[in-house]
Length: 340
Ligand code: WQD
Image (cartoon, rainbow, N blue to C red; front, side, top):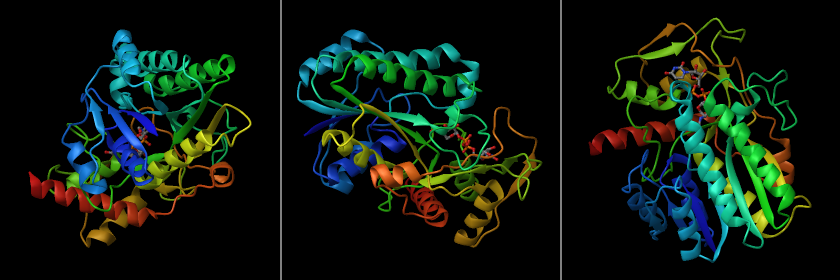
């Protein structure tokens, strides 16, 4: 069975490709390599022994998308990761984010409307909740006005899919609202490779520890939390990747009585920035060089998932602890630097 993974050379995409291959699926990757290298294909095949088919095309071109689907008529599932994901960059360049995160989604969905029984997974985010009123966050929590164009593209993306599913009963879709993906595959053949200065906490932390960055800045210690730093739900990227396979199979086996569902994918546990730092220090038996600076604009105080729906309906649960996820991130960083 052939599954298309758009953005399949990316951090979460590549880990999902490996999990799909381990379940015997035939994978084809589309990636325009704007934020990932074709080198990742070597890492994928080093793990699975199989190099996925790969097309370096730009999904913002409607005719290109059309040609692709006529070249590969036997695609039965699509996992759509291809998007830009830097919150700060989206504030400076909103139109780039609306173009990059929405037009490819529309063009892919338009091709799927001619096919029967296709399963579609959308890479969404807990960002859609903003600062939720209640914690842990359930899928019924209100969607708050987005604090960034990036977050808005996730909200709009979900609405586009919902409306498409309303008029295309043959289209089955699941939106997975990720919390904070971290870590790397235990083989250290693939992992997180942010281009330039990392925006996210864990890669910046490991790059500081390895000596690539001078010092980690902790954005704010005056939050109303137990230690003053903001709380997030850090989930091992392999657990997150496995959730995509489970969601895909739910649709391929027609196990749902509705054709559009949403699931929170997290561990259900919140960890503060300081707790992440302390965990890393214990793992690496080293002191991390960090300083506290004012809060980052747009950050919420706390976000962690109520995972009961994914546990019960998908039969999926995160298995790795924060410690194991950070350990894998550190192992990956050390290997990356050895290579350089
Ligand atoms: C985590 C915590 C920061 C960097 C975003 C997107 C989400 C998803 C993951 C794509 C916060 C603090 C961070 C640093 C710090 N995006 N921090 N110093 O903002 O929760 O989520 O990335 O998949 O959709 O919204 O993740 O890792 O940037 O921040 O103190 O150098 O770490 O303030 O509290 P975030 P993050």
